[in-house]
Length: 77
Image (cartoon, rainbow, N blue to C red):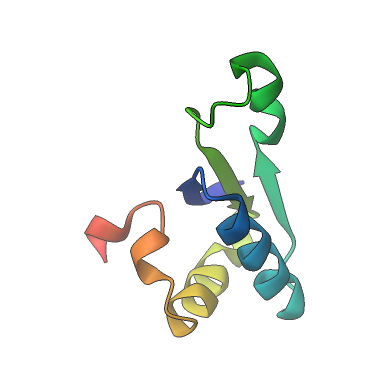
């Protein structure tokens, strides 16, 4: 599994999940339930991850959707 997006934005996470699913890419959200421990303040970002063999394709899908700035390592693009 490789990190794709790191964010606190729950709407963005839902959109990314739907977008990837629509392209046949399975995504998993890590740290989704951290809010139970943090008191729902949103201080800890959630990670959208994909399998290593779909990571390049997932990145391409998100870039084409205009979400390149949200990629976990966008500074290396």
